[in-house]
Amino acid sequence: MRYFDAHCHLQFDAYDLDRDALIARMAEKEVGGIVVGVDRDSSIKAVALAKKHPHLFASAGIHPNDTPDERFDEAAFRELAADGKTVAIGECGLDFFRHADADDAEKARQKGLFERHIALAAETGKPLIIHARPSKGTMDAYEDALDLLRSAKREYGDRLTGDFHFFVGDTGTARKIFELDFTVSYTAVLTFTHDYDEVVRAAPLDRLLAETDAPYVAPVSRRGQRNDPLAVMDVVEAMARIRGEELDAVRRAVLDNAKRLFDLSGSPVAVP
Image (cartoon, rainbow, N blue to C red):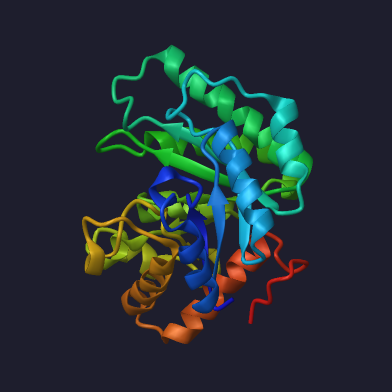
């Protein structure tokens, strides 16, 4: 694989009409990726899809607020995590943006759910895929997530790793994430806004991943259309442009970062 999409949702209904054809195009273009679950059902589908295709992998978890009534079935998620094609736990975390008026009970619910994912990640040795979306004008979801992770790091140490997906934080928040030995990933928003250029330039190259969050957030060339994992090439190109570095050097670096974080070295996918 020449490119790796660290976060996509190919199991979603948006791909029902052309999923197989798209996955075949990914293979032709040498694009691999992680199919990320947001609840038990989509996590099961993610694992099943990954098992069918050597260039796909899976992550199993419950989104903090897309499915607020779903109970965390520890046995079911432990079983999903044990599958050889499952390389991460999540997406999980804290979302205060869509709960701008979140009361203490709602925040406690989200934190409790996140802590269960953290424990499972440490138990299985699989990295977290973290969804952290702060309320407008703040970094609150990041700060609260980091507090939980610092505490967990004291208990689990190096067994606990992960990535903050779709990162929208500032340089100070990124620095705190890197201090915990976690990474951040960027989407195709880099192709149509300069809001995150400073953070992308300041970040150590070995702390960055590329993702699409497909079917969401298409690159500028396809704005308003359904996104897909092939757009990870646009993301890497934008990273290289922003950093003023050679495209192939950035491509190789973010690919190697994904290989290291998600332990893809033993997979059938060669990562040059």
